[in-house]
Length: 387
Image 1 (cartoon, rainbow, N blue to C red):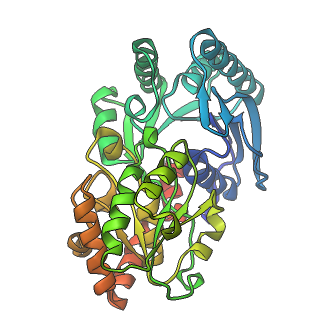
Image 2: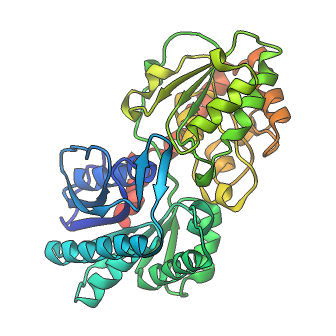
């Protein structure tokens, strides 16, 4: 935690997501906890979804419902007037909560219409706090948009968010360039990658050779999980008993299970569903190889990589591609060993087999852990505090 004293302020995170969304769990809450640790009064405005978290020093406020219905077959997204009504209702409640809270600082999470409209309305109603925009996705590419009108609203929301912001924080180099193109000359744009809470590599035990995928199982979110069945089939030609652990959830779980079944790989995959980031080490072993399959699309370049951050902090091998923030998160000396060609299952399998044949040395594992220290939230939050 950061222990330097600061003038205490009331800070509100205005989000368009449920508290269980990956951005909230992986980025918003860690920053909020660090801000609270130095004495600020921190509030997080979220949509209703699954169970709301209980975190000491953070106050959560529900300002509306998610713009979709969760079913066994996945999310059924609202459309037309139901979608407009849902988002406008959430925006008005966000504005009302912000007016009631009277924060000194509003951190606007994502450039989506709900949160942007809510913060804009708060400003119109006399809100005078400082606004920091936090961008961790290129929303036009990262969201399921079913019409030109929806795309237009997301496009306008991004422009309005940047115009509202006193300063802008982005998670990747792509978003840094993108925001700078749209920002005014006097607006500060700061790159703060999505980090990790401090973890202890000694918590990883056991020496089973295994593959692990962590996080969202959703193509619409830019995760190339469709590469996994072919990668696993190719790797198991060399290591027949190798197990793939799938940790996470998303819209495409059943589609992916069907793809594994077509290749007769049902028994080669263990599904563990949603996981608690605080207990992630229980899923891993000292010989784990984490897979982070990506293509070279805009959404992949704009996104952070939770999988790479986890692997680096624990000194574990990860096979991914030289896309977006990843070359920054990994030490340059290991790029050749860990980077496969994007969207190429053959090259991913080749890199994995090479790592199975010749695991990372103790020195290479140490270089990963040392490199990761600059990306812990304990250090990254100091940049937020300075804003």
